[in-house]
Amino acid sequence: MAIVVTKAVGVLGCNMSIIADPETMDAVLVDPGGDPELIIDIIKNRGFRIIRILITHAHLDHILACNEVEKFTGAQIYYHPNDRKLWLTLPLQCRFLGIANAPYIKPPKNLLAHNDVIPFRNGRVLHTPGHTEGSVCFYFEEDKLLCSGDTLFAGGVGRTDLPGGSTEKLAYSIKNILLILPEDTKVIPGHGEETTIGQEKYTNPIILEYLDKF
Image (cartoon, rainbow, N blue to C red):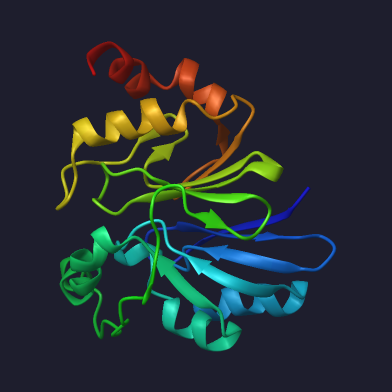
């Protein structure tokens, strides 16, 4: 099984995750949302070699440490192009939350699409719009592990009242893309506690409502 390290970082406690091969220590890093010094310390202390930086969506709390982590690791950043406009609003997002001196983070050149292969532990990109137009989840089949970003939470789902949000699209993404994964798939959401697909399929009140309404 992969080594998985998850740490809440940044102003909104985004779950930054590192998934590493236990033999080679090659790793992918998901959502460097803040506290770059902490993230870099984890990488150095554990001996991880980051080969890709993966972004679930372009809200500020998932990308604020991109510059520092990219520079330290030399790894390239990947995201879905439907979030490009959102990425470009980073200064506005920061002002909205009262964050001064917003960094300039150039939109990545490396783009993701639904069902793209991640060449690491049978990884795959799942495009799951709803929270944002470019929201994606990362599924590592070898480990039955899903990084769900802000699409799916333990006991909840991502909000849809922000620019690019859509309740109908979110419901479709969850029902037709996530809930078909094996029920014992471990889910690391963008915020909060870990869960499983089965737990959310049968007990998440919003998902149960989606199954009835959409």
